[in-house]
Length: 422
Image (cartoon, helix red, strand yellow):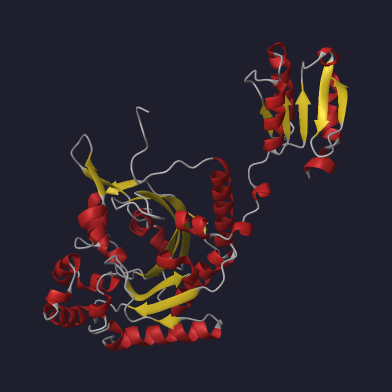
């Protein structure tokens, strides 16, 4: 091989592509039930958008972004996440002037230069939702409810909601000072990465899997919330309880991006081992101002599609609802290619999904492919002398065959539509 796919990327095809398409379709239907409409943003943005929104001291900005300069020397970045682009689009297109709540969902690729491992890629895909325009904790509860429904829709059981508040610009700065003071006395116990984070982004220490013993010695933000944040947090807990959504308060839970305020949450699947965090999200009330707009409260979450697909129970996706071939044309005699193509074109115009075999392979191999395609009928042209004047139509369910004149084929197939194809 002269070329191979870049490390940390993947080719998706075959059954996995079918499962992927079914998964996306179900996610889109779910988002619509909650009143969310789709938004698509560019896969690259001005680099400053992420530096300002995500935070210069975050691992994403400092280590993981794919940044390049265009022909006019402008710095652009492949999007490492999609919340900041959604907010940019919301402001740039004047959608904030409409008032009320704007609900968006998105599905698409993100890019981070990270160490590839199980369930983690350098080009990966996310499904996410964003609700912009309300500070009411009810919208937080809606987002958490929606995130749970994503996994329930695919048969997940035993899910756990981890919940925290990460404060706001009023109370977080003083907490960070307290946290840095505590970390300064624990420097020898920190891993190398957290020794750096203790200065640049101390909240990220709570994300580290190598410093669990240190985290137990640190102050927690839930003991340092301002009255506004505490009230919001209590109201959210009350709403979730009323909605019969169980949760666990996790004072060590933080999000890796600087724009988060107040609510932070994760959905865990205890049966998934080390990769048990299925999705996460939270509130980002200051992001609009970071992007140059007015104050706009907002909340959202994102879910990695690769991790979702890899953890979906085997019986939760019915592949028969995915890729579907109604008719398969077997053409062992290339003299009949034109007739096959003409018939296929007319039947496609009538709404049938058709695959025409044009490889010239032996009949046995063509019929094997026909069987694998899941087609209802296989149409055989030119296999023997009788088929010079017509088409052998084989019912793939019963195995029965009938010879149909060329000018009767379309009518014959349409006549069987109700029984076979609906």
